[in-house]
Length: 115
Image (tube, rainbow, N blue to C red; front, side, top):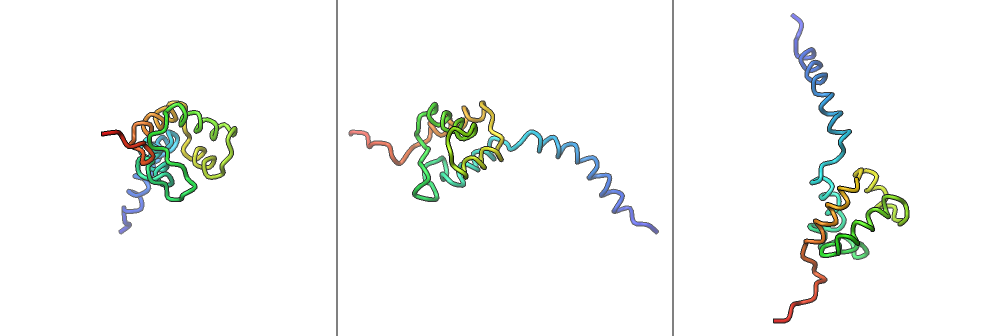
């Protein structure tokens, strides 16, 4: 008797392929984009993994957005950032959202408030 397992597996893959292709075409989710930033800049952009990576937590949203657009468009050079931006497929809306997110994070560079 022939096993139906290969046929069922093939049918399942055929049904799942369009959904997987659509997800891939849509690019990474916003959470994945945040995670990619955190991989180098640390959680919430406040603790970079290397001293030469900038702290982006607490930066002005418009500054962060301008920097990301400059990396994306090739007006600012950094091999790591260029490859990340290409892989993440950042749109202008993504860039604005990332800038807003990191601008609202607490920075270890913030001046202590007078008591």
